[in-house]
Image 1 (tube, helix red, strand yellow):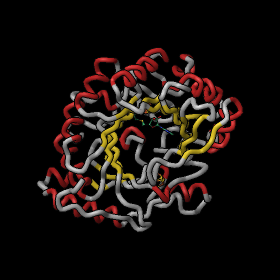
Image 2: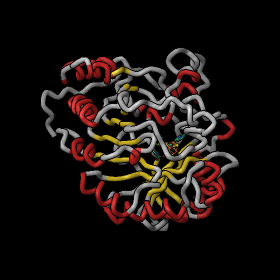
Image 3: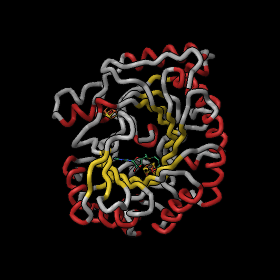
Image 4: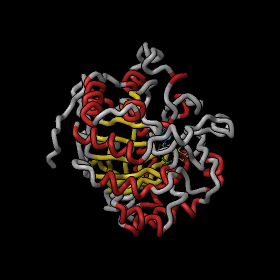
Length: 350
Ligand code: SAM
Ligand code: SF4
Ligand code: SF4
């Protein structure tokens, strides 16, 4: 689609800006240990005040500027995006931004029933990814520290399918000794349903989850578990820069994905910017500082000014944290990626 005054922008490693993830709130009704451990994200945690969070209008203005620079896909995330009141209004507004072809959402599914799924679809949401780390209520209680049952999340997946928010994906973060035994059951649950399960290597995002390298279950090991039961073959990526490596069951029961950001980093194809709930634009999930678009907007910046600042920021980008981590590189603790100053997952949205 032609975009008014559009200019594509590439970073210092030649990667175009194509996707934007928008965290619409840093709050969540879950306390997943790998994302928002309760001991840190307790009653005294300084979540953003409502006046610090971007309004829908501000988000749309930023997305419009990003669309002029090549962004085609927007994913709403958080925190838990469905906690943000009136999300359908934002979806409808984003869907009408010139150049935006797809609006998707990642959710924990706890507030996604049939009615809400239909409302989201009617507003223009294209598809949804639902996080589910186990089929065992006891594991969910321990890992997600959440007031939900597996049955509720499975009902959310069914609601998304029925509403046509497809292809529906399910994200499972796999952690050694905690839920790795649930890989095969989760694959089995969704084989033949059209739902695509994506097994995600546990990442060292933020600075609160106590990540240790030995807790990561490598994608190769996950694939071994599944293919020992149902043989798999690799599939080509759907588009350049797709983060999940795709596999299909040889018996025709559908496909799965693995996101191997620790053992097989994909920084070379990373075309994604991230907007925090308070309006900071980050060029890497492991960044320690973002471009404050909220203050620019509130100082009255025009769309052209936004476009030019975002272009400048993306052009200067050389991020490749996961590659450096995998190479055991020195310098990971320099200002750019210093662990203790990394943005927390619920603020940046994964
Ligand atoms: N609350 C929503 C949800 O859980 O789907 C959206 C936000 S959540 C931050 C987005 C995704 O990031 C989820 O699928 C979650 O499992 C994943 N995630 C969070 N922390 C992670 C970590 N440390 N390593 C890998 N994936 C993680
Ligand atoms: Fe909430 Fe999602 Fe983080 Fe879990 S992963 S604490 S559901 S934001
Ligand atoms: Fe992209 Fe940063 Fe992740 Fe590499 S580490 S894939 S640059 S977000």
